[in-house]
Length: 513
Image 1 (tube, rainbow, N blue to C red):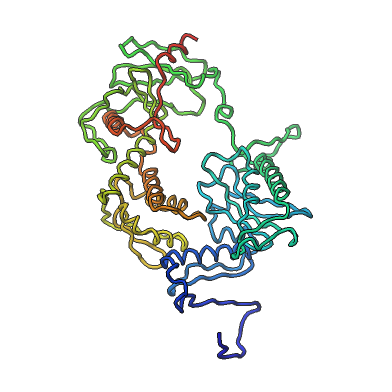
Image 2 (image 1 turned 120 degrees about the vertical axis):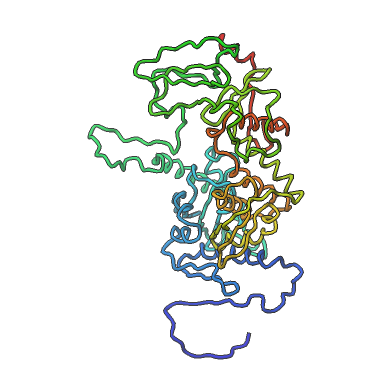
């Protein structure tokens, strides 16, 4: 550069560095550059890493006279996390720290119950520099040993300090990959310390509250104790003197029409009746857990032809439609369908089946550019964070192909005039948040097909019925008939179960035992 002018000016104490017109001159490697949105996303990710490394510094990022990032001075790392990712992320973190001669670290990591479905929120710094290090990453995951569910990943923002002579930063020209002199020692210290602190913190929390900070005064003879972060449902529910019912035990009446046999209720425990009037049979369950609503219900309306069926269910077939191999006999917990089958009793999940049907529909129509749309009389306005708005712009072509008509409404606000059927407008924002969380991880997707599959899964997840409490028998029959028509397997490739069968022999065996 050339120095054009030098003089005095009024300025607050501190240092200001401005980098402007990054692409004023045509880059020598122009053919290797991606789209503007892609390069801008890379710049924004770099700004976020710098901001996390130095919370005491203010940062601003402007693109085409639009402020994309404005981060004021932060007092500590926790405040910076809130500025960048919001209170919801911050509230799901716990503080960790360790001081030793060989290795020191401090930062924030996910509570075991607040892990994420992607690796997007993972930041590692060694001696103030953002790095990628398998030894550190593996040590953090080992610290959660036995506490991470399948497909879940911890969010972490950790700053590590080691002696400069114990780390090699010249592994890669970008200086982001490092190598420790004793990687095994670093891994062991990090894993052991995190494991200890995670279990200590989890032991002090019960549904997000610190045990011992009760608003009620404790008696001198009371003994304080710790509860785990989560409890098995079976052990946490109070017993009602009914005895433990073995898992998988099915109690049903023969369908040939025996008279109803009343069962005497247990003392102080009410009797809940569960019936299926449209089938012509009923049964009773004596006793229920205190403060619990009835967990099974009749199917409203039977097969009354005057009752409507939600259009969200008419995906591949229309009424009248009945399953060929199943006969619905009732519902459990307002979500599971109980069905008679030639081989025994089948139990199906309404949400999972509806989601699988929507996935199949969208996969077919997106490929054929024939997605059924839901026109919005009044366009929806969706305001996003700057970094999330960039991701939507980057994938705007795919979103349009999948049924979303997005138009800029100024700043980081979008106007949405169409949605893919059968997504309700109330769930639109949730779909975008879910999609952004999946695709904005540090890693890059190899194929557009994978991103399209992610988007379809996000739409199906939020478009599917949460439960089947509002569905009558005609609607449930249509749901199962479409499941048969598409020959959906009981277990999807992703490990999600749609339905399962309890063989008749197993039922007889349980009853004899």
